[in-house]
Image 1 (spheres, helix red, strand yellow):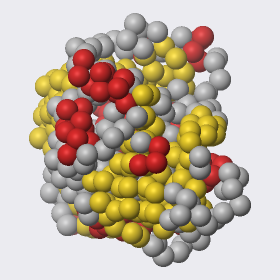
Image 2: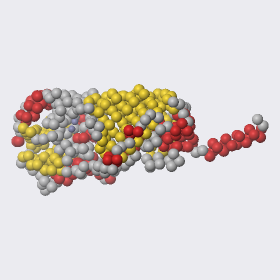
Image 3: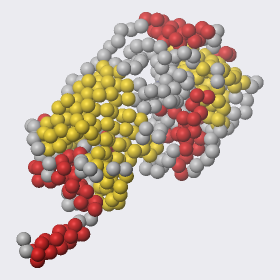
Length: 488
Ligand SMILES: [Zn+2]
Ligand SMILES: [Zn+2]
């Protein structure tokens, strides 16, 4: 090779390198490592089959305990790359004490912008826009889909940076979704994808899927392990049994009847009021999380700030219509996410939080978190929280009302649970000790033992979940121990 030609080639190479921005170069290197941009572009579909644990965040016995786990025994994720469709089918089994069906078959899909769910009988129904967004993001949590999306000329690549052994690039897809792709600087294979999401309890969370154990399938590199975390919580650790490409995916198209149905809006929040005794109201309505209001001599106290900001704000507003006395306290029965989803709005509304002491660190952390993606009341108007912590028991009492709070002891599922007893009414007020509609009452005997140990004489159960019942009926149902009914 002549010296001049060498010079020209070197100069051309230098120019080419100089003209390729590092974020573009990283994507091109990743595409090459995965089997080549042309091969990736020519793929029509992916299918990932496997199994693994899917823990349930916010449902552990104590806030720092291990999470209860759904074991996913069959997981099949199919992606129609050519038509922008995806479907996940799985069979999961509860490996924890669960009051509902312990074996569940779940099918969820997305066809373009249309999300849908399949019932056990196979019938499809349209799912809401939030599900569509989640599934569109989830589709990007795979090396092939994210690199294909990044190679799209309509995608924007930005903010190249290095973190550990990874090159990071922010990718905004043609449809406007932004994720961060991490590429291993040694192998040039994608190592993880991060997207930000809004969680009702935790606010801004990073959803991170790590890819490892790559194998070669028809000339394309595919991971045999995909591990998804939501911040510090494991969501799904998928061990792949079989990766396949370019299979028949014609059945991923959703029927026109589903496509033309309107996306269901979230159901409206309805709060009904049922007086259950003098100065005690049961606030029910939409959903299956009720709250109870107690009227003291000069103030009101709420039992339970559940689900999310919308539910709890509506409950607080309703409670304030029941009396001219100020609402000053919210008893948060326990830390499970569906029971503490209104914690932040209760603080934003100036209520003192009464809860078990074991929730202190966890609740303070939840209150300190940022909610910038979907700003909530506390994000918009931060204010310090006031707490009253209960250890074994506490009595709220004045001339007109007495509410005794007790810690549920030695329960295998509920480690921070406080229930209330109103001696004048012989009334039990409780969350998750019992719901008449549960398929099984696995911790019911412990509940009855607790109530006996506290020597409570109960006539009536006024629950957070389910219906108001005579206590005799509650005992009968727990002792009947109905057989477990799984659905599939
Ligand atoms: Zn619970
Ligand atoms: Zn519950």
